[in-house]
Image (cartoon, rainbow, N blue to C red):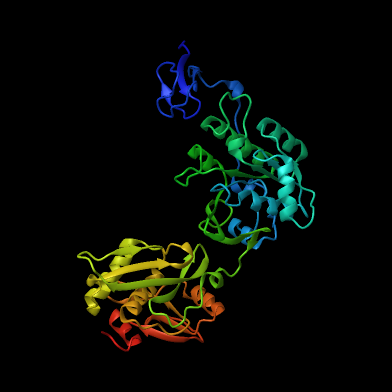
Amino acid sequence: MSKATSSFVCTNCDYKAFKWQGCCPDCQEWNSIVERTISPASKVSAKVGTVTLKCLRDIPTQINNRMVSGVNEWDRVLGSGIMPGSFLILTGDPGIGKSTLLLQIAHNLAEKYSVIYFSSEESLGQVKQRAERLLKKDQPVLFSDEGNLEKIIATTAQEKPDLVIIDSIQNCYFSEIQVTPGSIGQLRESGFRLMRLAKENNIAVIVTGHITKEGQIAGPKTLEHMVDGVFYLQGEDRWQTRILRSVKNRFGPINEIGFFDMGQNGLTQVPNISQLLLQESSGTPGLSIISSLEGSRPLLLEVQALTVPSKFGIPQRIITGADHKHVMIIVGILEKYLQVKFSAHDIFFKVSGGFKIKDSSADLGIALALLSSFFQQPLPEKSIALAEIHLTGQIKPINHIGIHTDEAKKFGAQHLLLAQRQKLNSSLTKHTFSNVYELLKLFDNKN
């Protein structure tokens, strides 16, 4: 019979060592290496038993009505609401508004559902102060500042609420695991236990998570695999708009986004983000408006280009909000086929609102912004550019044109700049182009 063996494992990062060491050589954590006994593999015992197997047709259909909060931006990103029994994580930079958003969601859902909110990062007094500032009326949300997950799970199993919110998972701990909260061992066990709590009791569980300086969720990657949905709340200090983005969602769309505006009264929905992003800039050379898909949502964005004669031997190329190489490809196409001497000019390019263009439907808008700045002539007033440009100089139609044009109509667009082969029935004035040569007809003085 084989004997049991021992190994030494870091409880913080799972580093395996041949012998005990005071400091882990991988994560530099002191007193984190412990001895673990590995039992020898044994034959399967008859006492273990077997599992029951079923065909799909024999499994009863489970109908779960989603919990709709009434916050449309939140509900849409999750896929029409929170699925009962789901395990979700909301993450983002410190101070971005995670706790504020979840407090508002809990308040809205408490009108129809039972909700428990565990705040391990704030005391109950601090939570009350924030709630009184953000919420207009009191709802029967139950609060606790407990961080011990054994107590949290036991309380939840006893109360059986519809929704449990834990803020945050990095500050919670299991007393039986002798490592600090937020360590890999704690987070792995926390994720597994909370997942079982959600599935076995059909309780929706939402936790907040910290992120690293690289923008990733702090902790083991297995935590992201355990949860049903990963949602990022993003934004910039200089911009009050917050973007809720789904990067994983077993019960809804991925890469879907919702918009909120951060103010004194918390986060408010921004249903018409295009109106917020676009400023009155008609008649200004170097500007064009494009429509870019973010998830299933079209966004009207302002593309800004500035070309000036270069005073240096090597012209500058400063690109913000788009892939540098992609913009340079469009510059090369225009220079080759239209003989526009961008090689003697500095090019400065940016996209409004801090967004990054990833959609090829923006090609025509980028090209027209560059030409408009070069020729110092504005594009037609309230025009939207929607087309892809190939390396041959041909202008090609795009997919989902109807979604883009519907958003353009809401903005009050008057002109559509499209590929000649684009199939579209629209009341807006259409300007069509088959290749980049035909773009010059928009400009009178082609110097």
